[in-house]
Length: 380
Image (cartoon, rainbow, N blue to C red; front, side, top):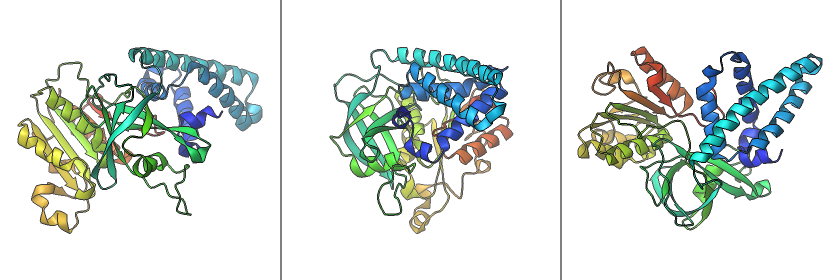
């Protein structure tokens, strides 16, 4: 099953996160076997990731074979022929659903059917530990557009893993442009005890990008995917509220910049939390938005202000402390009471869950709230 190393995070496999995600997915599938509609969002999210990694239909058979063997090993005598038959049929049913969905997604990409070579055209520091990578297709062809909030996969060889490829998803961090894509990557620590980069650490690929990749280097990129997006294919005549923390601001910048490009007139609230201003990516760009656009309101929370932040508080942020929606105007900032308003949340999992629950406590309907979920937390 060496293809799993190429398509999935080596760190997630070593640390057991990939196995846990598969187990959670199987449990959710079994619990909802008579109501598969309840799994729609999770199946869509997984299928977007699989399409982004160019998973092939035949690879479902390989996973299914070893999955059933593993179940037999764990369950022992309880894994009777009838149980094996039932799970085999259930797995095939789910695999067929996902294969069909992923096949349809791949058709939407036209002739972009596999990994494509991109040149790193520029690398820009956005904040402490966050860099933007400007990626241009090596063949020079015009790039397809995408829906703001979506991501691309970046793939590269990893010598420490015998030159297996490793892939990671990164949100696109700007409005669509025909000549380049931009992703903004936070460097996660990936240093082992002996001071070297450790491929089994979850921050390995981001560390390689930050420390080893330069302008002129080539990486492989996939067609934009993801079910977290503002649907700009439809008329947007309603308020948009964007809640982010840390590097979660990257898809929010894509959304707000796209709205600016489209001359959007309805209110937009961008509410961001970060530990201090040094970690605030795109800070000047974000803070300048209300000056140039009357319909955009920006509110920022700094959880751990340093002395410089305190001196320049009025310029750099609005509130000290963690994001607290109670401090905001429910109508002007959050548009509570306007059933047409749409909400987007991106940041650490605990942050997203807390903000989602808070919005629901204000009366916002769950289907109006979208959250970006990466990693192996595929079911929520």
